[in-house]
Image 1 (tube, rainbow, N blue to C red):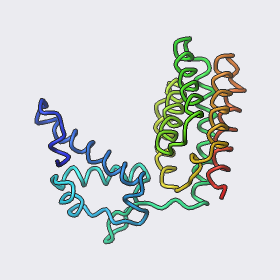
Image 2: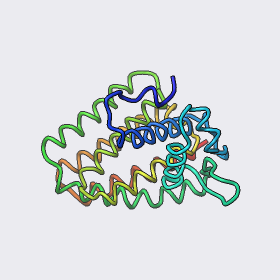
Image 3: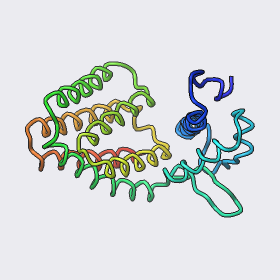
Image 4: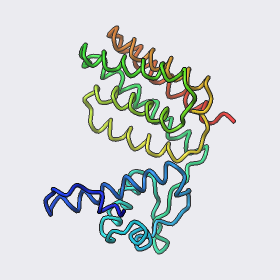
Length: 225
């Protein structure tokens, strides 16, 4: 079944193109994150359109978005290719993420409600429960991203959230087995717990410190061989 066949049947003509572009974008992101599309792989619009059985327009728009998100790079005459994230670039990404995640946690401190805190604690408890099961790289990475997305969302700062989303997206390019090690999973959950505890206490300084320390620790663990 092609991507276009999987779209809802009840949609307007105007929304059809946008839905198809988003479907193609999700498919390409998934293939990049899974490694099916490796760094340096050409993102040929005609080739992808033929493989995905869609027109070139949504593929072209999806590839352009991948470039904006930092998942692809464009070179004149060579076209777009899947981006590569080496150790040095990963460090640069996390240097920025550390500062921005600290700011997001600080701003979230005065905005979170009791209901928000309950939701964040539930996310932490879910991660703690999974520590009793076998590691699952995709699941554990997704739970981590969901947690951070929630904290950042409570900052109420959309430009900040958008910038962090792009940084997280780029991080997926880095191949690491970090989530396959139980010690790394335990550390991540403990650090998440520290962030939520600071938010609950209303301690903006500690929330910022905890978020920055977590980002710094994740970088070390990602690079650890």
